Length: 129
Image 1 (tube, rainbow, N blue to C red):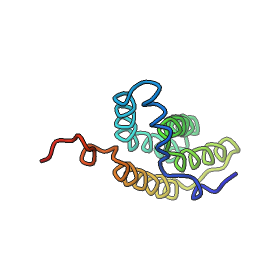
Image 2: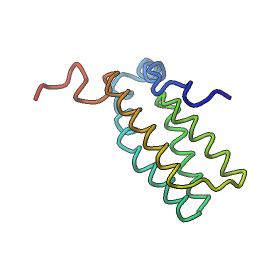
Image 3: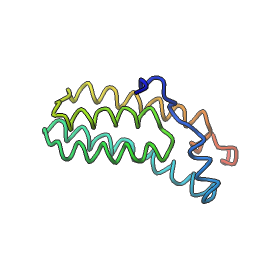
Image 4: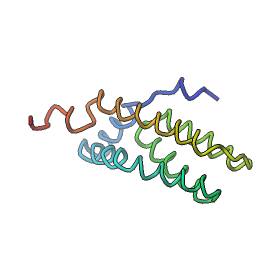
């Protein structure tokens, strides 16, 4: 399996495919919702880990993993897949270490989404302030 660092932070081909299959508005709405819900999904995972509720942690990971794949956030998807697998094997990762990696991935993802023009302030059709 490839190291998470070898995976793209945000593979724009995935969103372009969604835009082609549905329409650009659907793809933009999806990435908007995905980015807004990242902290909520991460918090669900962290709460599950902190309370040692494996079911909640895994449910949060599955949600983040699947939506990350749909958004093209392949590095975050890969991390979630590895963490989910570890939990299912009975490993108990340190919540602080998981938080650090999750939020580092989220920061990279937001930065890359901005660079690719998926955030409102960077979209060509966004009104100037």
